[in-house]
Length: 344
Image (cartoon, rainbow, N blue to C red; front, top):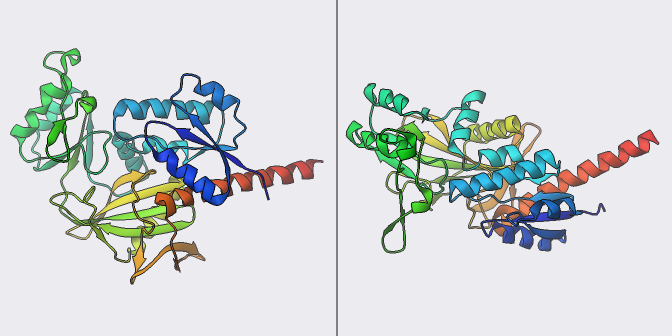
């Protein structure tokens, strides 16, 4: 058996604990490294780990940017393997990048506008737009930072908030409010400035969450609560359409994504539109799919999806991630060993 040791990156969130539990369950050696420490580079350089397990934050833009910068150094400069991959983690909780990526590769998604200049936004408002529109922040999970703008008057209020009255230095930003246990409170730490993400409003029946981790596929419905499916925690255990499984397969193969949840709108007129790409996602159950009441997953074999019954989403699906990463590292070590033998 090939000897493997994994590094677990400790950051802003408690995600790393799920990696620890998964490594212990699988009997994999591990080392926890605080990627936010002032000497994190020396810790990485001196580490004997074969690869590093990552869990970026989604609460604040600055947190996400700092984490992305350090992953760039770790993966692209120091050439150390990470899981999930850098490209999918860079898109994670980065709705601007996700929109560009989906458009470049031609995957169906809601019509989206990324506006970075005040003059462009003023021209946008002058055009004949169909309301309502959806305004989104760049980061924010479970529909946080998502607003429905129902008329031009409401949209105009964003002009000076986001872009400043006379100069960008005077932009106070748009203040979002977060739902607490009993009341809303202002999220000063996530004030939005200097950009707007605007989407065409779509009438949807529900949202499908299709998950691919390694060779495992899962799918279920995210039902609506009010106007939103994200964050509703209302689940429909329906067999996902094969069309969506194939769409997610294509997305992950195109991006070489290792771990991905793709949230897909099913509109009232029968279209499927990609709403989110999330390499790290909420998973509060040991099951992410039931088919006729049976828990399990799909595996793609001989150009067909085959159902396999069982519980595969232990430790919020992090066990699957660790298994997949171990397989990737093991395959790489075996090939390296074979190449050395062939050269000898």
